[in-house]
Length: 95
Image (cartoon, rainbow, N blue to C red; front, side, top):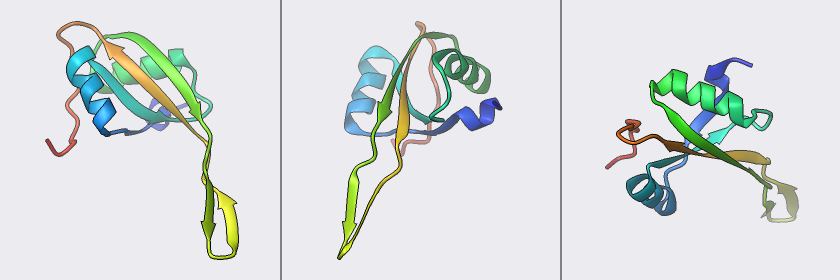
């Protein structure tokens, strides 16, 4: 798997911003088939930082209704990456 396809986008919410400021943890939406070792290697290579730990979570898509039509959003995977001391990733999060 190509490392550029593993990390899809950063997740910027109030909770992820607090984790970034207090614990130096960054949250990303990643490929569903990627494992922790691949995610760690991709973050270290793309952002030139040292990763301490990776936690992943499989998120189930919610049910969606538009009028009489019903369906589901896609399932996706979330990764929370903790960096070493003094490490930082520059994200364009509007702040």
